[in-house]
Length: 82
Image (cartoon, rainbow, N blue to C red):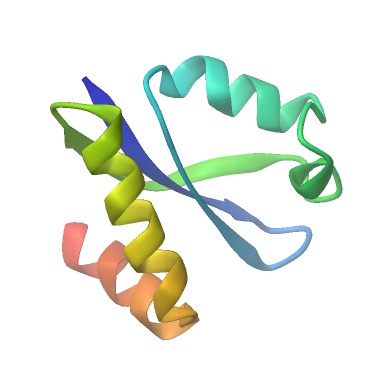
């Protein structure tokens, strides 16, 4: 099982899109500064997820969302899930 996730940082007012097989571990890594890109936005919180059968499918979806380069698109995904 794999997860596509969108994180949000109040500090930066930014979203981060990623994919992984262990969301708890990955969120913990983001929030301890493991990733240079997300270290400045601590704390991050999960605002959206999608589950997939495999990591390849989750990564494909991650790439699609990132190619959109649209905060509006990300926010529409989040609001449609609520």
